[in-house]
Image (tube, rainbow, N blue to C red; front, side, top):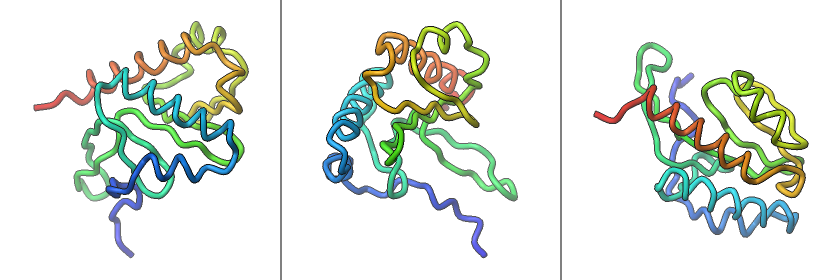
Length: 141
């Protein structure tokens, strides 16, 4: 059994992935999330595995000390919800979560049914906070 991570950059087209999202609202939300995270990070979107759109990257010591890469900011337009992968502990920011709107949190992920359910300015603030925290924790050398 390989300890290679399954989720890594694929080189596939982010636009082709988003264009294939069946639900038109989820597709539009995916494009809006791509624009938002692109503006915050200043980095291009890239596919990580078959369903995660990531921006920028960092390395950490994975199993057996082997370096593993992961995006610093990412989202996925899943069938039921739009998922934002937010590092740094969402629960440490109740001030933002209380103002965000309809969402749920679980294990470093922020789940939103539709972007129209939340305050986009608060989402931008939360995403920018998470990205800044990731840059602080994983500085480029």
